[in-house]
Image 1 (cartoon, rainbow, N blue to C red):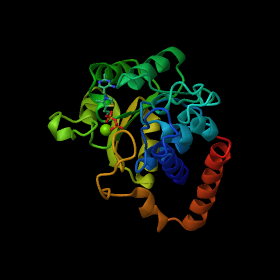
Image 2 (image 1 turned 135 degrees about the vertical axis):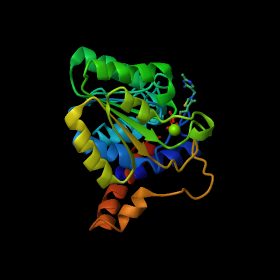
Image 3 (image 1 turned 30 degrees about the horizontal axis):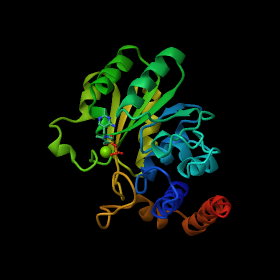
Image 4 (image 1 turned 60 degrees about the vertical axis):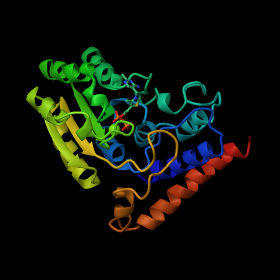
Length: 262
Ligand SMILES: Cc1ncc(C[n+]2csc(CCOP(=O)(O)OP(=O)(O)O)c2C)c(N)n1
Ligand SMILES: [Mg+2]
C-alpha cells in the first residue's frame, strides 16, 4: 500500500509539472485492494483497466518501467506510447487497457478459457455494467473457469454515483449466475480472509468498496476523502512508520534518478 501511495503521489507531481505527455489515472486511496489480492495470487495472469498502476506495482511489475511510461520515454513499459491507462508488464504477466471499459473482464475470461491458468480481472463499478462484462460472468460460471473478478467499487463512473446509474448490484447478478461472491469494505484483513475463501471456489467475484481520493483523471481533489485506509493502518501495524519511510525514500530515489537525467 505504501509503495502504491508514494509512487502515485510522485506521478501526480510529475503530472502537475507537465512532465507526463498524457493524462494519468491515479489509484491514491484505492491501494488496499490490489495490495492484498496480489499477496494471495502469485502466478496469476492479471488484466486491468485504466486505473491500473496499483495492480502493476502490487503484482511485482517494474516501477521504473511504469515511471518511464508515464514520462513518455522509450524505456517505458509500452515504449512510452501507451501512457497511464495502457501501462502493463507482460513479465507478470499483466495486460492493460486499450480504451474500452470492461474489456479486462471479457479478455480475462477468454484467457482463462484458452489457457486454463488462474486469472485475475480488475475493473471498476462502471465497467461491470457493460453487457459483455455480465455475459462473461455467466460464461465463466458455466465453464467453471479459474478466474477471480475484482471490482474496485469507488461508487463512481467518472462523476456519476451508482444510485444514478442502476437499481441493481453487480455482485448480486454474479451470485445469481452461480459465481462465489462477496461485497466488502477495502479493509486489508477482510480482503485477505475473503479472497482466501473465494480462491477455493473459482470462478468468483469480489466487490471491494474503495475510496478514490483524486479526480477521475489527473490530480484534482474535491476535498478530504471519506476515508483513508492506508492512514488507518498507520496506527494498526507495528513499525508502520519505519516501513513507510523506507518505501517513501526508495520511491523518491526512483523518480529522482530519472528526473535528474531530463
Ligand atoms: C465502453 C466505454 N464506455 C465509456 C467509456 C468512457 N469511460 C472511461 S472511464 C469511465 C468510467 C470508469 O468507471 P469505473 O469502471 O468505475 O472505473 P474508475 O474510473 O471508477 O476506477 C468511462 C465511462 C469507455 N472508455 N468505454
Ligand atoms: Mg468507479
